[in-house]
Length: 399
Ligand code: CTP
Image: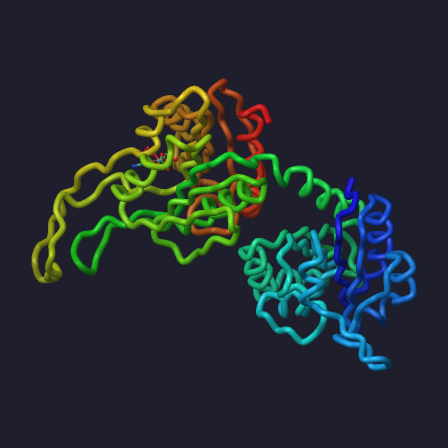
């Protein structure tokens, strides 16, 4: 139930706006208090009278009423809401939200809001797939907004493909699910490692890898969205955290990551080790730039296996999750790592799978737990993979 939840619905100008009527009716039926903001073009698709009647509140379109000067305060609205839902969200509004183009009441309210924001895109197949739109959606998602992916099927244009706004019942279920799980990890603290490590050769060079950090950041955000306090220890990435529940600690080397993990893990309920830690570092670091005309040989020595070290100090009531990035004999290698590092489960990704592993926005994983249960998941965006991993953690913790 959404009893007493205050929800703003932003309706933008797309044919799917007719579904917003059902959406509002369902939310009101669930006990929510709904206020509707429409863009000017949305009014061409569905009437304000319909939406006002269903939401039991006057519709807001402009910053003020030209008849009497009544002011619609976007700041007050943004603070009033427990959740905001933009449905349908056109490519135009998505672009404005991602770039803070605040030329209407809907976008200014979005920018002033402090609550979770759900975005249900609806547009033609090729518009949805366009890199500019993908980039805007990725930006919004990185800011912590929840994208409700459109469904595939016949589109208003006659084309077949992805772009149809998700059905109102499913959108309402997603919002209910959010509020049900919001506080599920409240009071618990988790450690997450992310990104690569850089092992210094000289003042300008390092040994590193292609890890982007996206998987670990997505896991941290999902844990935080479920109420957990998260210590995110990340190697060098260009990413930033969004949730206030995340404390981001930036490190460079495997040694720095090791020290940070060892100091935080004892006070944590669990750790998810998604960093691609360098296995070797140069035996010595030159304080001067190594000249390119020398016949350079680099001697390496192993770094500490952070996951294995945490596995050694892990207590009965603590959890430890690792990753395995493999190229061959994947299952066996993953099971060996699971045992060696004393993990509760391991997330296996194979570089043989297209779209999996490093430096992509997607991942394809198999989870193997210590009871040898094996679950294969489809290729999906990393933020959805993060949800699968956190759900497996909840199952392991019997929550
Ligand atoms: N890991 C770690 N510290 C290291 C190396 C790895 O914490 N020095 C963690 C990774 O974060 C991951 C898991 O151990 O959760 C497995 O990492 P992976 O690189 O796949 O395995 P390695 O143990 O390094 O073994 P190999 O490189 O030989 O496959």
